[in-house]
Image 1: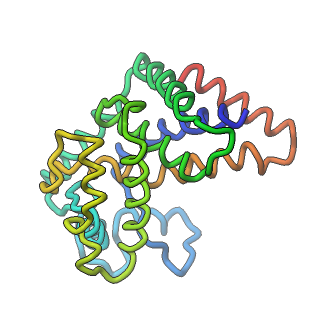
Image 2: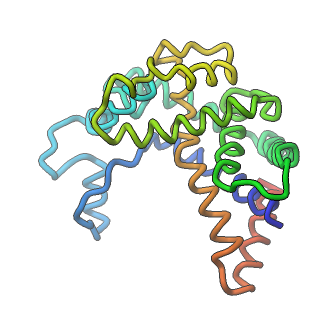
Amino acid sequence: MVVYCILIVTMAIISGATWWYTRTYLAQPKSKSALATSAECRMIISCKGFGNNLPGLGCRATPNQRLVHSFGINNAFTTTNKERYRDFKNEAIHKVNLTNDKWQHLAKEAQTIIKGSLYSSRIPLMPYVQSLTLRIVLFIMFDVDALALSPTAIEIVTASINDLWKKSKLASTPNDAFQSQHHFRSALHDLLLDHNLDDPTSNPLNLILPAYETLWRIVLLGFVDIRFRTRHGDIQSASVTALRAFLADP
């Protein structure tokens, strides 16, 4: 039951990746004040009405330069160049715009990944969810054999992303720069041999970060909520039934 829940929650959030990419939206740091109306929310999305004179791309790219320093990326979330924005958006849409047959194939691949990676009856949940999510993201984005990926490299990449993501919210230092992350870069190279990590435009993290960094948290919280937090048995049963139906026909 536990394994099944992890699997079906994972499959559910992969569909959310399409929403994430096609709208090319990255959440900004939360304001200390709460905004209650839809009109105010639309003003934030359009970057108008709050004394901000930056153009739309600049509003997003400026605070996200911390990610350029930490991960060496150049994508729709970090650029002010309209051509680069369009190129990345088109690439991302193409990656996640799966046909029905490909969704079915992904469902089977996810089941295979889980069955092949359960090495013990007791495993740490968070690292396991991170590993599973990254493997599926790499399978979708780069068409790699997810089961053949090095467990050590997967562990290093997930831990490094988590560590650098947190550090990127603080004052940057040379030690935090992507060029200084030798173990991280080596592990990425082991997973994706043919990608140039020194070119910000072709860096695979351009695609990996938006897909993976938030989705693993959704998988984890979704699993915990459905499997453990739902107190009413009928509600839990209905949730599991709905997710099983989605897995059977994504």
